[in-house]
Amino acid sequence: MAGHVFHPGHDELHGVTVVLELRDGGTVIGRYHDTENGSLRLHDVAVQRPGDNGSRAEFLARTLKFGVRSDTKFLAVPEADVERMTPLNALSA
Image (tube, rainbow, N blue to C red; front, side, top):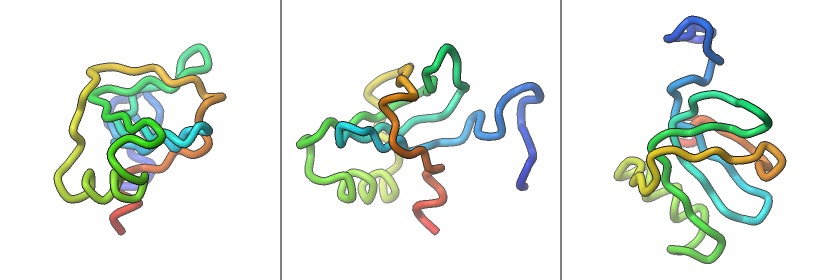
């Protein structure tokens, strides 16, 4: 339901799995927690560095088909490194 925040006092995206497209070509997928001190904080994160495991499109297609293959429990990504943030479920529509 649009505008509904599951945990009052948190951002609307709190708990939503998001895709971060990084300026260096990398991709980060994880459950958004919040933004603090200029960093996006995510839980249960999968990271694809530029050149790892095929293209971004292939990484996203695998994730959409099989789910997030978390390799990091928690990650803080500087906002300055993020080109775009998109909810994962918006990519499967």
